Image (cartoon, one colour):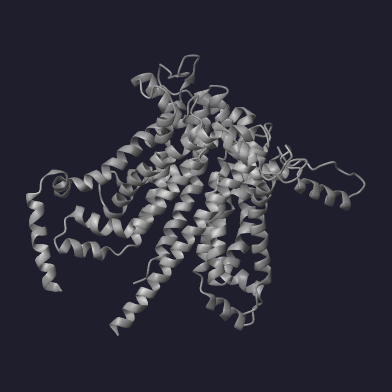
Length: 323
Length: 279
């Protein structure tokens, strides 16, 4: 076996020296540079430059020209009027507060629904677990818009769900019967659909975390006389905090910048920040203001993101085998 | 200790009901005769017929597929290169900036990504005359950019869990870097590359926010078309479209699951055989 290998290898080792062209160049020195430079250049052109444009746009002045902006001609070349407007006009502050509120409530509800689900997934048999995990991921592969659309159908005034809920409500309080419950175009609808769309992002990291926990710890605590719920509070919950934080941020970060859900099921009177950015840009044609709000949203998201990276790095370090 | 956790099981039931009741209800009402999409008026499949007769929807679906195929393929090539660069070259100039470029698009709100790219395309058209009109090209460029970083994440995590000693052994035996990449690294990470491609494909096919910013008049992808129809309210033909999409996805995911399960079984059996042969 070994001798056959050496025979077949001999011409191979001699060949690259003779062969010219692309692969030889690649072998000499190009390959490292190519692998780094091509994606780097792409991201520089199509991610970094647009990003710099937004930052620069936030200190520009709106004009009636096309494209509708120009920069201040004199020192210090920075127009702070947009940033001041951010704090003076209550629209922006209200939009930020609505976004943070909606995203926080949605994250909390995702945790409330997702945690027992993730814990339950670790307790079912292996065959069932694969099927159920597939069912958690499945909605993610279907269209995001259609998942929102499914709820639009359910929340409408004539839908079976609305009539069912109205019937229950009228049974409980017959003094003031309702014709239907107003669910569409409310803040409640935004939160509900956000929870629906982002729940898998909570369940999966939590499951990954809970699955690794050592069940013998639970058994030890039980043997020492703890009640199941006490074991959960003292053992499982503290050990799953990295999973809670990872899942929470994976829900909170996209939910706070969400645009599609508030436009389709929310109210125009109580817009979220994504909608404000989009309206400033498209309807008001105020590019500098849209950019200013965008920069403010990014600044708001820096904290949670750094927190996420910190906990991810710690989880990675913990996962690596100890020497 | 071996008591069934009744509470957890009922939470699972509730959770899956929450996931699937809206989707099943939507599919159910796609067979509704009535024009009102949420009031039952008898069984009918006429909406499916109308859907397939609707040239606008078919054209949009075809455009979306074209963009998704092209952008996913290019995003996979670029994303795999970025993943290789980040996990195999520990030190090079600009590495911190590079890894920032890779992670930042993942957390950037879509609306900001969309607006920033649109601003750039408009300014480029103003200054260098390209792109002359927005449409297929601009959507594809935008999709490549934000889906390649997902590919990078998937590939990078596979590369970091891969046994580097195989690569080192090949190098020691005289393989060139290109040969190591072609004969060892790429075959080993090929499942990750495939799932990265699928992820990029799905993201592109599903994207509405960024597409609607960077598309021009006349370029309507399927999500943009659904978006404009959904804004006007619930219609039964969208229910039919949704039913088709959900069924296709469910079948694909089920097949992928079975294939992966079989492979896993075979691998375990092979490992068992190898162990027995050694003894």
